[in-house]
Structures are given as structure tokens and as C-alpha cells.
Image (tube, rainbow, N blue to C red; front, top):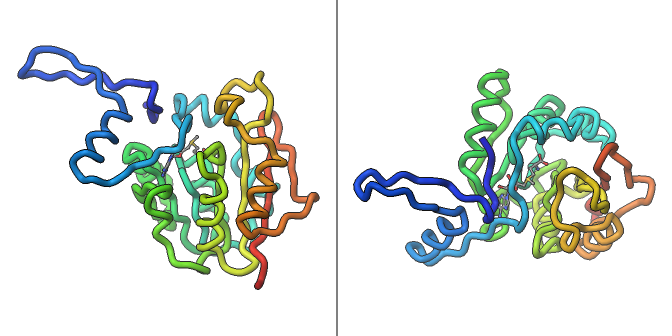
Length: 232
Ligand SMILES: C[S@@+](CC[C@H](N)C(=O)[O-])C[C@H]1O[C@@H](n2cnc3c(N)ncnc32)[C@H](O)[C@@H]1O
């Protein structure tokens, strides 16, 4: 199973027509837009590989601990939860609720199934286009927000501003992303892959504080950044 980016295609059998048509995810968004008049905006280059391959890139518990999210967090949100690689680990640390948002119903369903299987009951997974509609969470309500492997977004400052909106004063925004290195086995195209310095600038523009000591190396392929929402 994999979540498909716009380059991938579903093969769909049409029994009546006795022929097979190719139907891309982008096509389905266009169809939705035509029928509802609404705009849906999946972050570019944000498709996922096979789940096991993705899981092998990370030590989720280690990464969340390095970023200091293993303590003092009640409620948090992950923007673009994918397979829930980090959602489930975060649920183990969070004293309250973990909101897991994804535009792909398939991803949300995978996260729900995994939680059920693991007996995790503090995750609320929701199908949501946070680019178009925001997080759908109250302002100043959460202790932490995760923007993991998603800041190659067309409007990174807009996304960070939405994280800022939902965080409580002194809330934490954690970012991880693929190293700016063309030899990493996955990751967005280099033309759109952000360097840590760019993410730091965007975070400051969005209203966060950042201390250089909160810039982490997350081997083998990632870096991490921890921002704070100021009290005032
Ligand atoms: C590269 S994956 C990262 C998943 C997860 N954060 C991780 O690091 O394991 C990005 C996820 O964001 C989701 N996504 C992309 N655009 C989105 C949007 N506009 N609203 C909600 N989810 C979106 C994709 O469906 C995908 O599951």
C-alpha cells in the first residue's frame, strides 16, 4: 500500500465499459474541484513510498525524545501524518490527545487501524486538507505541533503560521526534514527541498523563536529544528 503522489496512477477497472482506465490522484482532486467548486491542495512531492521502507528511515521514539517531545506535552497535532510513523510514537508520550491530519483518507484509515491494533485511544485521525482549510483546531489550544517531512510546501510560512495559531504560548513547533543532500534515498526534489537555514527564517517570519542549540542532526538522513511560540 502506498499513498500516491500526482505522478502515480491508480489502475481502475470499469466492468461496464470492459476497459481499464488510468485515474491519477490529481485527476480526482480536479474532479472534486469541478463538482464542488472547492480547491484541494496536496503539498507537492508529498507522496510516500512503501510503508516498511518509510519506517526504516526513522527511529520515531528517538527523534521525538531528541526534540524534547517525550515530556511535558498534553495535546499535539501532526500536519500530514502519513502512515502514522510519528503519530503513534507521539501518542505514547502525550498525556492528552494527538490530532493526526492527512488529506489522504487511506493514510487516516491506516493510522486508525494501527491505533486500534495497538490499543491506543488518544489519537484523533482526521481527513483534512490543512492547506486549504487549516487544521480545524482552536487557537492557543495545543502544546506541540509536528511538521515532519512537509516543509517543501509551496507556502511554508503559511503552514507555520497555522501551527503558530493553534499552539499555546510557549508551545513547541518541531520540524524535521531530509538533509539537503542529493544522495539521500528519498526526499523531495532538490529544487524544492528546504535547507535548515531556510526553515529557521520561515519559522521566525511566522512568529516563532529559535535558538541555534535546538538544531539537531538526526542521522542517517534528517535534520530537526525546535521552535517556540513566544509568550506574547
Ligand atoms: C511525506 S509525507 C510525511 C508523513 C509524516 N509526517 C512522516 O514524516 O512520516 C506527507 C503527508 O502529508 C500529506 N499531505 C500533503 N498535503 C496535504 C494537505 N494539503 N493536507 C493534509 N495532508 C497533506 C500527504 O498525504 C502525506 O501523507
